[in-house]
Length: 69
Image (cartoon, rainbow, N blue to C red; front, top):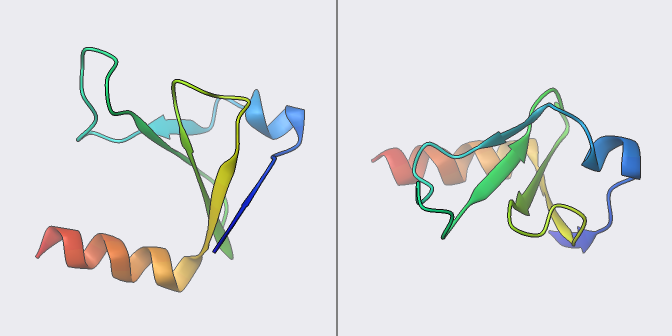
């Protein structure tokens, strides 16, 4: 896992999706960039041009599965 800046065209992309578990009042907001297969970019929606965590697809799938259990 590493933090990196996403090219501005990706940061401005409309494919960022906010987690359904995020705070509706603008608090804890996690966004995932849809359409990526090998890696899953994740960012804080309050800092859209800030750092992005990039997870390998399999690691992200395991993380999500664990949260669902």
